[in-house]
Length: 189
Image 1 (cartoon, rainbow, N blue to C red):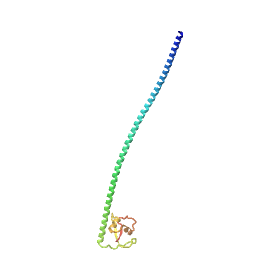
Image 2: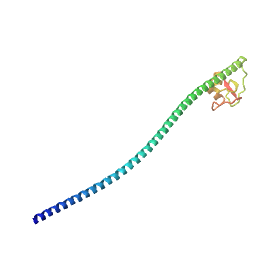
Image 3: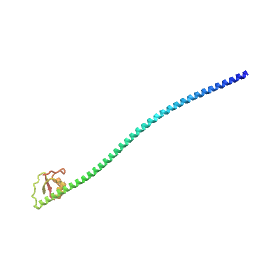
């Protein structure tokens, strides 16, 4: 019986030792799991902070994009307004140019008519006396014409029914510029 008791005691002690080791092992595993959980919770907290920062940065970026879009819209509107202004100015310039050309044409016609009337009046009064022609002007029969305000070579040429080139050649003019009061010799045709 002593042997049985000893065997029973030995077995009980072994069972107890095995149970303690298992409990220790389980406690170690539990402590390790708790440490893993704490590390994971720390990582989750760091990720949450990063997400909050990313959201804040995203909001700032969206505000900047909105501001830039408003600026783009303002610039586009200003460009459209400037284009309208430029178009209106171009139309106004075209209209003014046409008006000036029409007014100039009327002035030229008026001067040509007045010059023609003056020539006709001179012609009706009789044949003009021969004019002494300076040595610088070639010899021949000429009318003597005093340039009046607003007259041009082309208007005078039309009135006398001669070409501008003939008047320039006779008076040795290098260009079409004439002065009020200048005496021109107009060749008779």
